[in-house]
Length: 327
Image (tube, rainbow, N blue to C red):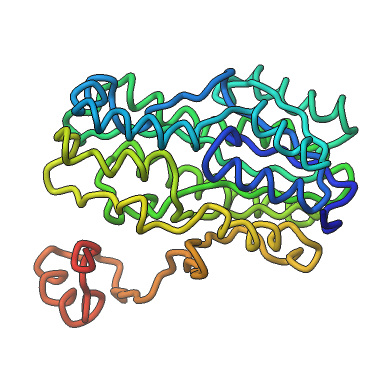
């Protein structure tokens, strides 16, 4: 095991499986005491598929699906056990971070066990397909309750310990969906945009306290990737929505970890309020929206529609392409 984070305490939400599990194992391998987390014992299993979709699969496909899932599902306890079996230190805590009291209990459990919280990696998330006109209130609330609300809940209770010690690292998981991207699901896009807004606001608030707050948008093999292999077979898709990449075509979640480890080092103390896209060996940094052009009218009279119709194409909108031009 390494010593990069020896003496540090890290909470990783949503670390029962997938990206969160890989992150928890990586920090533990570098000496951190890790608090693993998911909502309840046992995997939540299906992410994008419904039970009806699963039952609609032919018997041989269901068996293949079950065999694959058996190797990738887990919970906070199974991740913690893997860490302990490797000689690391880990504490599993089942808590629904969308509930403030649960988030507080998660942080208090870390402090009671290890004395403080130095690092918080929020990976927990919720998913569910649906065109805008078909999204139910229940689905909207379920997806947005984790991002950004759940992330806020845990940060609220964890960050004060970081401020007290004048050192802390928070990394929130988002998705390229925060820009719309190829995922045309309004609830999911909104949740991830909220995670970015929360990240940037907190980065501004706590920078002078020695606490950095960044976000990452992962491209990695997860349960959703495996389920995506079956989406077309059961008709689980949205008109106009591109198919998810096949699981075999997506990078391992472990490939994300070196950069996330780097963001939490002393060398990254001035990196904050940023959003990075990670996948395989590719790392991208997003530029925040900035005003690139301005038009002004040197008059006390407001713009008229006729004036704007004449001015916009040759000034503010010169060379303009809307976001869909790149999809």
